[in-house]
Image (cartoon, rainbow, N blue to C red; front, side, top):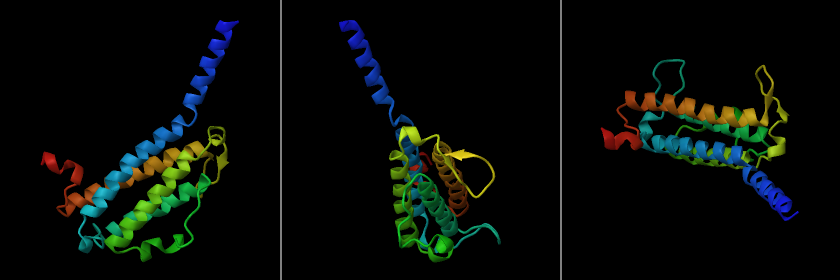
Length: 174
């Protein structure tokens, strides 16, 4: 009987250990990516925030605003709140200066990171609606948020290199 109780206690402790593992690992990966996005945003000179590789393509500030709006969008799908002072429909027009962009980037990454961490295991399978075709769950929202941030980090790296800005985390190797 003692062995049975010990085995049950061990199984319960493993179950408790795994609670939130997906959320913690996803939020951790997102924190790493957000750190690089933030470093790169800080490395761009203010006068390059209006730079675009060609007409019809987002500027540096617009790419950052797009990341911000996506972070808030995904956070809202996970039960997070978009700050009352954020006007989602006009972020790309409103955020043009380095200071405004970096402040809101930080806040949006905190919002999505918190929303991911606060998502309960039992709700990861819950369906959420996106404005594009397909069936999605809260788990999908977490994964897309991470992939989206990485996608636009790559875009910003290309923008930076084109403008002679070296990503800070790689500067030592150059």
